[in-house]
Amino acid sequence: MDRSVPGLIVKIGNYPLHHGGVGAIRSLGRLGVPMYAVTEDHYTPAAASRYLTRAFVWPTTGLERQESLVDGLLAIGRGIGRPTVLFPTDEEAAVLVAEHAEALRQRFLVPHVHPALPRRLASKQGLYELCLAHGVPAPYTVFPGSRADVEEFAATARFPVVAKNREAFERRRAPAVHGTTRIAGPRELLALARGWGERPGVILQEYLPRETAEDWIVHAYTDAGSAPCVLFTGVKVRSWPPHAGMTACAYIVPNPELAGLATEFIKRIGFSGIVDLDWRYDRRDGRYKLLDFNPRMGAQFRLFENEAGVDVVRAQHLDLTGRHVPVGEQLNGRRFLVENIDVAALLAYRRSGCTTPHAPRRATHTELAWLARDDIKPFLTMLARFVRPSVKHLYQMWRTSHSAVRSSVPGGGPQ
Image (cartoon, rainbow, N blue to C red; front, side, top):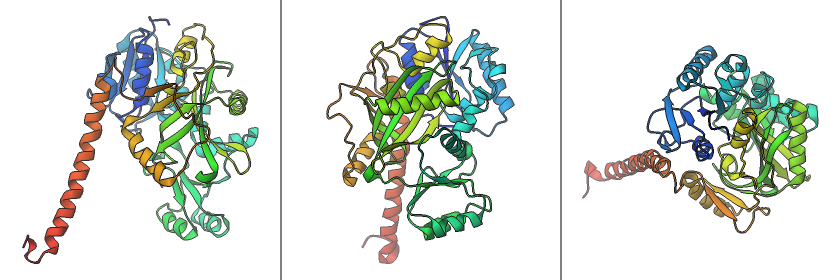
């Protein structure tokens, strides 16, 4: 590694419990690369890492003008004082870096990608159109432009269906739906659509039954010619919320067919940089269908490493600093667990009876999202920030139920 070139973790918005950023700090920091990070405050897990040289406290919402965000990044670059590799952890940051790469290259090293491509990939409609144009399987999707379109869809669609926000950034403003929402029938759809206004900002997508599907992930880093320097495949065993949220447990599993499909698609669209792709294998027709194309590192990227010790973050740093990226087979059988969400996910999946046939029975190695012997403070900070709101919520539930019991007794008190 070129230890004279630091790395900067860039995020936009308020999500302090992000294990992907901590993983990137550890991945390069353990190799002696100076690491910096944008954080919400000084008490986030990322800011607590022993491998972090400095935290730049910069609370953002995602509603700022892009020009002010670029100015803020350039000010951070001046504070670091030397060329630095940028690592976005969310779509907003990835789009910002791509669209303003020319200005940011005054201070930073960033992949060479078409400025408009990350925004199009982060959009559900843009991604679906690219899939259709390049023959990549994807769940059938419609994009209602009016209330009448929703009513027409409700009258003819096969339910259940899935509703998602059309643009990746809607969660920062006034999202029509919160995350992936399963809709059982036309009555439920029309009831939900009352709050969408005359121009619904949603997509309505074919539902792939969890009983006949498997969730797969592909992580890769591609060079300026869109050729993969590293590419990994894995299977998602659990997520939170169940079947529709963040990865809670996953394994590296070889899948040459999926690797070839992802490589060809990335090459055709001309993407350069780190990618995190979500696919669902539909056993009904034997096809892998692309659900999400995240033009940045995924939170679970530390699951994936090859025999040479290279993950996607190390690959990007090596490539952008002019180093050779060592090749090697992916370390099949590795497992990734996110401690603060996997317990709940495990209980939910056991109740549902869903299994993942391709998951190994036993892991060759387990990578934890938070806990690391050589860097314990991020785990402790996560616990403090995660447990306190949970305890407060439980206490409020207890107070509410206790008050309800008291009010139900004649006289308002115990008898």
